[in-house]
Amino acid sequence: MKRVVLLALAGMMLSACSNDNWRTASREPAGIAADPNTTDDAIIEVYAADAFSWRGWFAVHTWIATKAKGADHYQVYEVVGWRVKRGLPALSHYQTKTPDRYWFGAKPDKVLSVQGTKAEQLIPKVAAAIDVYPWANEYRLFPGPNSNTFPAWVGLQVPELGLSMSFRAIGSGYAD
Image (cartoon, rainbow, N blue to C red):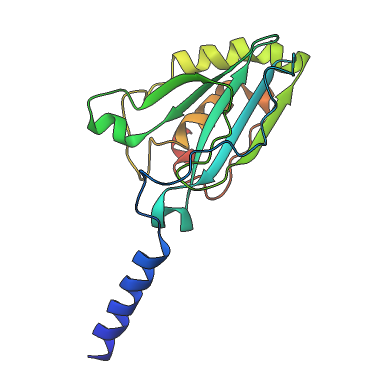
């Protein structure tokens, strides 16, 4: 009986501490990306935020943003599992002025930031690596390929980036 009560209590705590309403979770900009309207430099950034709901206790979701020199927006690339369930590619690409949006309630951190001439030189290499990402239509939470496999793989293709993935980037090792 004691074990049942402890399990029930643990379950209630888990459900109470996690935000399971993705529709109302914040997607606001975190204010850590350079404003593309006032920054002329080329930029490459990799962001990581706690994964959604209870998964965030253990793992992060990562994505890549690039801004060409003189561009007034960023290109954002990320892998999202729910897209596959809807018959879409896991790899998503969109343009935005705010690549640092909260990941469904979780504030992102910059994992990598490359700016200026080096970014300008590396953006074509990053784009070429993204174009041939081998798991663009696949997603598996563990061991991968997942949202962390993607930037890790790009980092392996473009070692000049110097990308180092977090221990919490579960699935990043799948890229090896």
